[in-house]
Figure 1 (cartoon, rainbow, N blue to C red):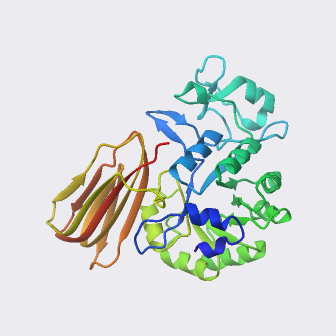
Figure 2 (spheres, helix red, strand yellow):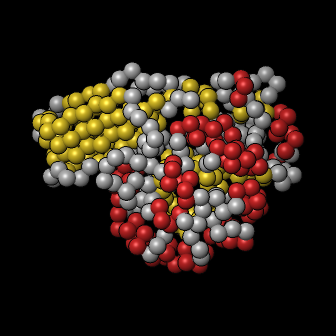
Figure 3 (tube, rainbow, N blue to C red):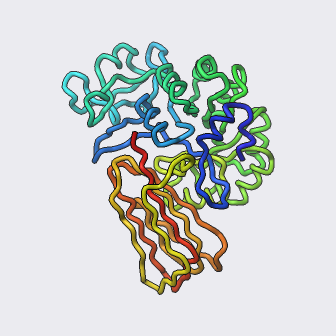
Length: 364
């Protein structure tokens, strides 16, 4: 899978690539809208901002996604929503914005002067970031930006700052094809409801190093993934909810765009490990592990079993059935002010050949 990355920053991606010590070809992790974190109901690290790039580097993500919008006076800024209401506050008193405020309806100066990003840390209550600021942060921290953008000028700017070390990503084939005017970067196309063969045809029309990305976890089954990969293209699972993100990994996606997926264990030693080997688990019986956890942490879980089990990890639940042992199922999640909450419960009498859970400190 990594051999398709020869076109940009291969050494960096090899250094930061996912690893889990298991015989599974793990996907490259991409932090969705940057490595945002919430402290209760409020953002600590907001979406789409340079602080999220720094946090992505702290957690070891090789890449982040960012969303590009135009202001009224055609300044490229980073914001996911068409409005700023969900992620920003009034600058004057940090009050909530009560009326809809659209990015495209305000000038850059109006946006920068009247509003700030929401954060529990007053020092991070900063104005809306520009694309230039986000790209410069990516360059500083060695992060590959995935530009979710239909703005061709964003690809031009990314090439000026980072060369070919960025990813162009959108559902508009016409838009992402514009990246070829500036760069031989990786292009990811959302094919909508197209089948695998039509998707391959469209990727060939774009040319160069390409792949597809979809949020449709029902469409992206193992056969679809294999067909696209066999044709020489990458496949990204885009913010699949649990339990579908784990299945996408098992089915062989090459990228995992996620709000929580984490497997960046290279160069990190676990601070705690929980193991079980050759364990019988009668129906209804559980094994749990919830250790004391540092503020910034991550957890991985690998399990090989026979039977049907329900795995709970970091508040997400997965139901798995194996007719026999021999295939390791892999999980991972980043944590912030949260314990792993590991629980494996047998839904029928099951035999766990091996279970390994590792906790990592991702603090500074």
